[in-house]
Image 1 (cartoon, rainbow, N blue to C red):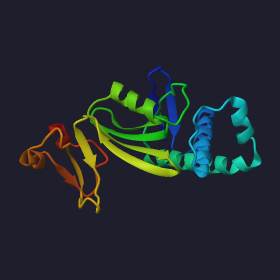
Image 2: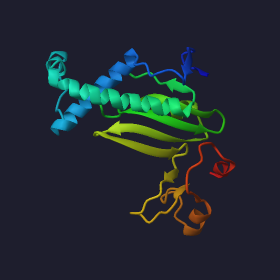
Image 3: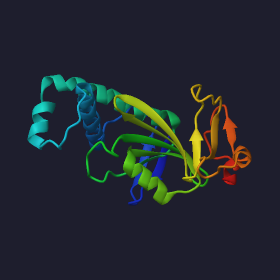
Image 4: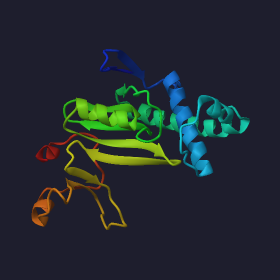
Length: 212
């Protein structure tokens, strides 16, 4: 089954969930970025300046570097399978062209929207966040990203004063909550009245969220 989505530039894209994963040119660039970060994390260092192409080439062409490239490829494919399994339309958000890890972690953003249904934004986190804010309202999301050799999921709501707080034994929170942040609602009675709790978050927009 194919899903069709039209990007901001007007290009129609088809995504067939029955196909095996294909690594595009953009995908290869993403893999190289992830491999490089894995390499730096493995050494436990942060560079004080950006390396030249020649300097990076000496490192990445070494036979031992292939270990990081293979790990990065497996991680990339795992994230793409997450998209395939969801069977949601996918929008590839163009990169700004400024490579770097600050604000540039590779991200899959699963969006649950009132007006556009469920879909996935795929790209670097900074561009994905900007694209989401610019083009949509009335949604909540789960950003799945990789940083410091770990996968991390970040839940959020389209209004900046509303937060999604997942269940946490450490914080004695048995259920996931969607509610205003304390700095926006300091009255405890009002805060409790505006708090919705879930054992598991719905995978769609529900009428209760219109109250925010």
